[in-house]
Length: 107
Image 1 (spheres, rainbow, N blue to C red):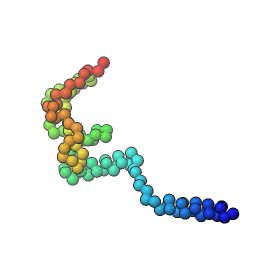
Image 2 (image 1 turned 30 degrees about the vertical axis):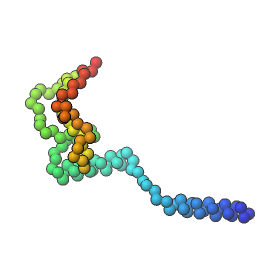
Image 3 (image 1 turned 45 degrees about the horizontal axis):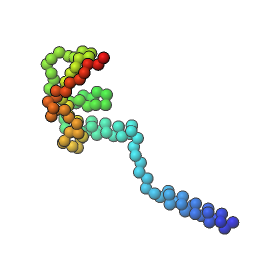
């Protein structure tokens, strides 16, 4: 009887201590996407940046080209830079290469 009572008290103490532990809640992918999307919209608005959203990518066209529009299977060359909202250094860019990357025509 004493063993059962001691076991029950030990279980109760462990349960109470476990309930008071700090728990970190990590947002789901969808929740984080919503948080990030709102931060991007606010940043663009505050800095008066007129960007276009295509799928999940925000595009800012600095200079519109004057050539013919590409058709299917045409190769196009673009210059791009990807930066975080709070950073000034791009995490990815091809502008230092002069935007001269070429793509192979798909079969």
